[in-house]
Image 1 (cartoon, one colour):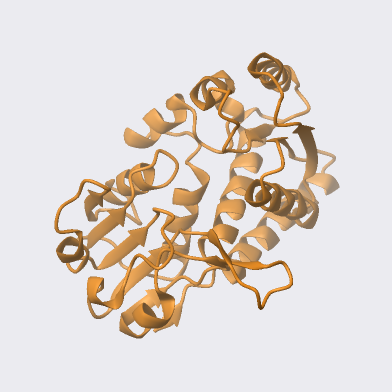
Image 2 (spheres, helix red, strand yellow; image 1 turned 90 degrees about the vertical axis):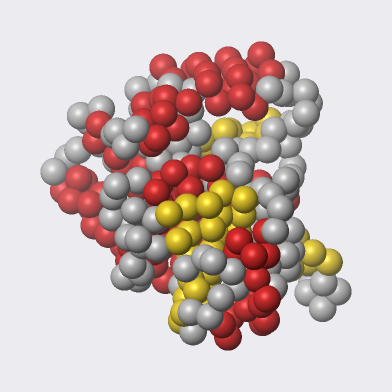
Length: 292
């Protein structure tokens, strides 16, 4: 069993990006600028946004964090999105999800300029992904594909099973791994809450990706010997032994499953850092596409 170390891989990517930024500085060119909108005080969202700001500092990007109380109106938020769309100093921006119930997430996502949509959630970018056309790939699925690629894991002709059909992870990663690309060319089964015989389906997987947010859902009897297991889950569970009173737990029962795997991602330290690295890649690309 070999760990797919997302932190190590993301650090390698950030070093590569930092070198490009340093070269741009030497040439007197613009430095990438990422903005993030955070609404409310959700602990997980705050952690992710802070990690993104920290990554910008490490690479040499400029960053701007815009915060609103959870009571902010949808119209005010949409106004800020439009302002960022028009701000030529901002190369890319994200609106951290989830948003409060009174705000329509789809309406906000659709309001973002696709050329600044570095999270890759806009319908235009999702459509480009489906057609294998240039665009911004969703950050978490792109991070998954990148860690597969950088660890030399063969995907062509392999059977991949994805648990969870969200628009953020499950659906896009299933499409990306089935495309005629490298990594890609998998035969993909997308499972979800209505899937029957999910255990038997998972046992066929050469590559098993779980993104449902149910701690410990994937057990050893759902994984075949030698499978590659990628755990996207990051659920906070109570833990009195930690000073903060909780710890992150993935969808996979790691201690049970790891001995059967050829590769497996840890939680934390697996997919999470790769998501941030992918966001940084998209931000640099957004600036380059504008010819800045």
